[in-house]
Length: 194
Image 1: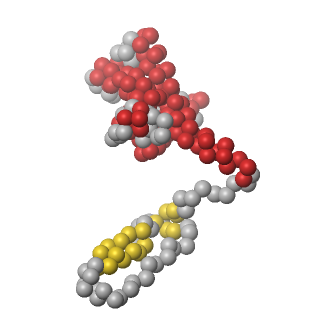
Image 2: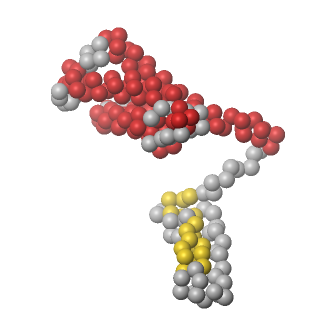
Image 3: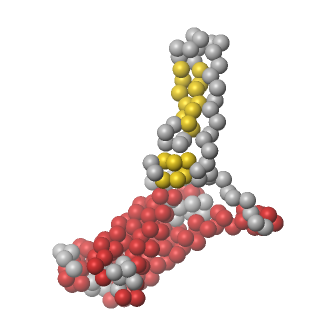
């Protein structure tokens, strides 16, 4: 008897393996090929993780150079947006929004206004530079989720005071929280990430 590494495709669609100790040494178990794509996982469709073929193959060297920068651009957009909000809060006083929070039912307003200010200031800096990125992006996503629910009854349109803006920035912040800082971040430079 010997251990044999058996590889198979599990129900989750991920390649799995396990050691089988009870098989004789001369038994060869075949490795199963991957299932056809797309694969169904809990009703959702999962596609190949490979990049598609380019319509203009000559652009491949360009894309290979700039794709790693794309996540930094996304982080910059979210971090800058948060910092601009923090800047205006500094101008009028970080706790100036406390009465507005209390009117919306967030009592005591000073705590909620102060927390929002800190998420926007520290989160903006952290996301912009990619430092503690997942933590700050998750905090920003939670803030946007709360704003989303506050403005739910107004409707979707941002032009009418709706939740469109909060939904978009919340989803982008959530994506950053899932992905982390990316290749051009202080998290990556330090070699540590949440």
